[in-house]
Amino acid sequence: MPSITIHDLDQHVATLIRERARRDGTSLNKTIKALLENALGVRPVSAVHRKNFEKFCGTWTKAQAAEFERATADFDEVDPRDWR
Image 1: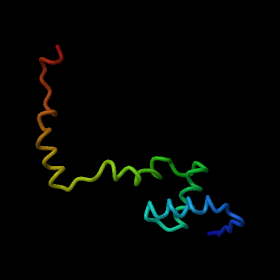
Image 2 (image 1 turned 45 degrees about the vertical axis):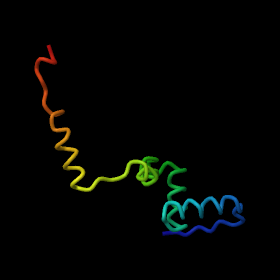
Image 3 (image 1 turned 90 degrees about the vertical axis):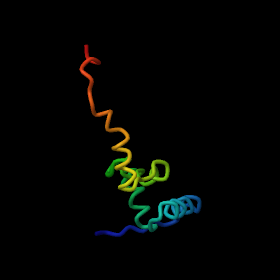
């Protein structure tokens, strides 16, 4: 796979890339590749930003998911009278 060197990168841009990598918990190389893929439309935006939304959405344990399923089980039942 080819490598590319970027000369005379603006300091502000370099700082933003480093901050993005730190925030996302990825290497500079992975961050730059993701930014390029996104800019070129090679990877869908949703895949790029999915990790950024996890902190807002969170994840459930299996026990929490099971409790949710139990609590909402009634929603699966359809009352035919509602369709008259």
